[in-house]
Length: 168
Length: 140
Image 1 (tube, each protein chain N blue to C red):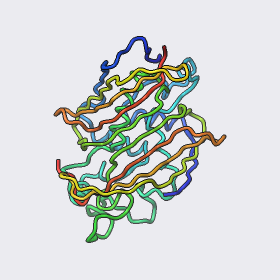
Image 2 (cartoon, each protein chain N blue to C red):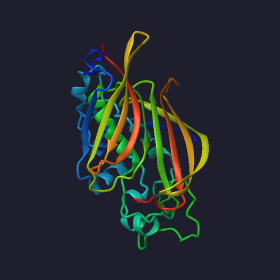
Image 3 (cartoon, rainbow over the protein chains, first blue to last red):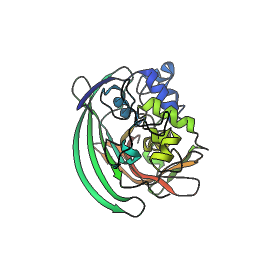
Image 4 (spheres, rainbow over the protein chains, first blue to last red):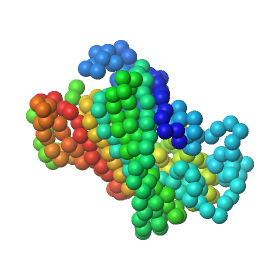
């Protein structure tokens, strides 16, 4: 994962994201309506910020041309089977899960602006769970700035690698 | 339109059904929009044979995004100041999810009004799939 990713906040992308979370609020797709609101234009819905990954050239959860992909193709995975499941950043063997996510919004994210996401590691800890065996938690802090270098969003993400599939 | 501090009290609740019979296609939509193409969310052979799950399951961030839709409908557009959740259970295709906010505090800071909310999103069996809290700047 790149330490710094600069990405455009595009109105079309906001529309697609809002559709994906089932949100038909016109402030996310109707520029004429959005003009009449207190924000004066299209804004991004909460959690949209995570799309920075689309602009990260090294993002591990996106297939890349010419590189093996861990999802299925002819077989159930495109990677050679390995003894160990606990590698990779959320990918390896499907043992990586998202445990927690927290956002602090310093102001709304507006269509048309350009943002820069800066990532740094946080804490790491382990825990024994009844449903998932041993779990390794890893925190990551992503601060998102505008082009005046003012902070817009602080995102704290905790991922977990479980030693086995979580019991249902 | 934003929520009014004068119209709410601690303990008030607001809820919405944010997913009904959640489709695999919506998981594909979310993968494409968000950029998280982890095959565990969209690729059944991988999810079952490699990861050992009964089927694909929703991105945690999709549950959070849908919970966010309830939140912005309640507090108003662009008013959230904080939003955090813990993902406590996986969400499988076919799920019906209800997102609920409970007013934990109504407060003033520097002459502005804020609401603090406790959040709980549950599935059709009443099991919590994400739990968290949020704060928003609201109108007087």
